[in-house]
Length: 292
Image 1 (cartoon, rainbow, N blue to C red):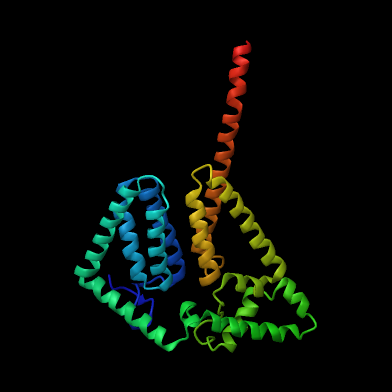
Image 2: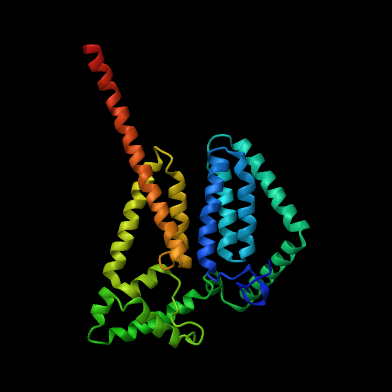
């Protein structure tokens, strides 16, 4: 509609009144994965147009993570399902052809793709490879390490290491020393593990990731015997994005999706447990019936 502000300077990316690009990115990636699950794993072809529109929307965001995840998830769902691989390959080929046609024929999408490509080429040429991949997050991590090292000289340094400095306190100072204070009162590192550690310390970081990894193992075990596969994939997307791009644990939209994925995984584990109990109880019931 042309309303609002572009997510990147120069008009690249999407344009809207909502300026939380990473949160939108995460939410749309999970919806895209859900559509692919329905389309390829559950063999419901009616979801193919929805998956296609999600893919187009993610490309319109113009981020490296959205483009990479679109391609990786698409290839995964083409290869991973063991049944109907020929059907999935043909359907995937049709989706790819329509996707290519849209970006080839629609002028608006062509211009958008050109501007995104131009921006990515500029960043690649003017940053080292690691800074390009992490969108400068390693540079911010360096500032955070310097700030954390100076805090360790304080008598309460060990206490801060264990229990953190508080989110606002640390990231406000980080915004100041990194030159972002004029535009943002707090500046996250944008690696969730790093932001969690400097804000709430080693103990809280240990408990949070211990909790997440515990439920991950349970979902992995359940996915071998039930329909929990999607929740495992969704959790994987969130975990990778959280570690490399941040904005999963500290933003309302994406953290809500994290909660939904964990809740879905828990429900699938319980459903699988109930199904096993019914199967285990069935033979004994038949034996009792014969005895009677």
